[in-house]
Image (cartoon, rainbow, N blue to C red; front, side, top):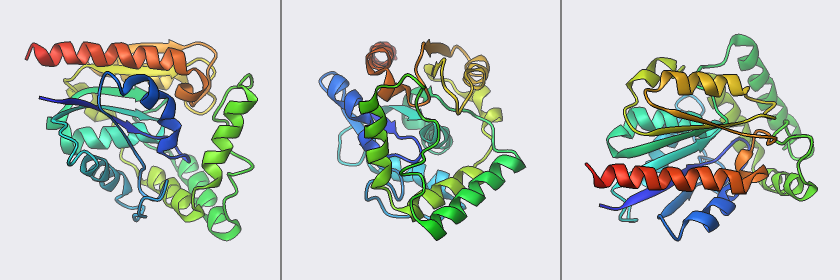
Length: 248
């Protein structure tokens, strides 16, 4: 049995946001960072079923890797895809990491904001390249901020628009949480201005035996802003899951 780590990126970045995790962990576990539909050169998919199709797309990335069981780690939008992956491919999942994400769906106001953003992207181009959402804390290093902007700049506006609409359409996964039976790590960060730590805490409270970890001072992209802390948590969780798998 080969255990692997599947990494699902945030909006509106691509799999390169995981470079620090690949470098830190690939010597101990096979790591598969996935470009979700439309990002990083991946093919576009329609918004209506994007989350489910993204989960299937991520699963297809495991073909030929020799990975039998997988730890799924999703951050923000990647967390939404991770929850869809659990619904569609749960038999393959050995462990789950939900970072800086939420389980509930958008209310009407949030849905409208996403529709408005998609319309702007389609009419004006990649407006997030120079005016990204608050993905980092106010104290983030300039090099990290520039790295985030660089990744965003290269994403096609249509890919970002479709993903925005997909998030507006996404299912409310709250009712699914109580049925998650694999080891689960929930990561949040104290300076996350996009998804409140309270929403991550709600996930940890609802998933049986989940563990909540809070990274102090980091913003929404905790893996980029606090890579040592994030990698430490993720590496320890990989070891925990590997031990649980060996005991099965």
